[in-house]
Length: 244
Image (cartoon, rainbow, N blue to C red; front, side):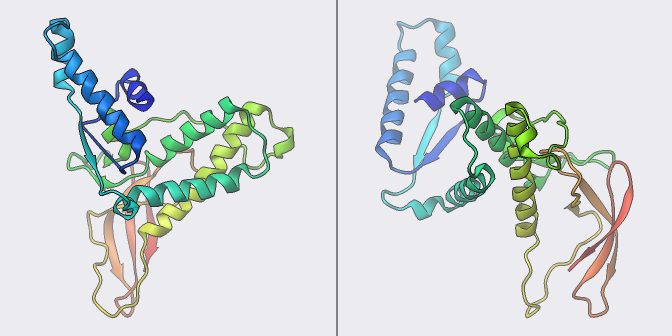
């Protein structure tokens, strides 16, 4: 229930909740349903009724005792927990510091590009991100100084938080790009890069939540036509990349 209140406070109004069959979620659904019925009654002001009925939220449950039905979000939560434990390590954090780091990591996960938008033009490439489902647009980030080369014992508490988030970003973004580039044996023909495809340009010197995107302008098949190189163009430059 607290999650729903927080979502409304930040003007995020979801249309559908999909969760497991935990008693806390069942209870939250019941509370929201009772709240909706109350606000939809004739005793409530007309303005409140119109607003709440327009934002009617539907709830969908996976089958009971079947967490594998939520494999996508369970895998994302698992990867986040593993990396978060490795990044924090033996550091002792206050509650507000851990909350700040968790919120920033949440923004990192929700900034990843999913698919290109049809509205993308030659001047700029727009992609769909999880942030679009939350606030209707991509999440923005403020550039922060690079603290990964500085000794941790010489950082202030605030800089320590930024350093931990930066370490998480470096590890998780690298793993995410590797997952996108699936490598399999050439037993069957695989689709190669084509002119016009949108690609992620791997760059080690990036700000947190920065995903440099490029559009393939030329392709050059390899000697056995299994691997190839291509020319990509982003908003600032053209460069050659290899792909296998």
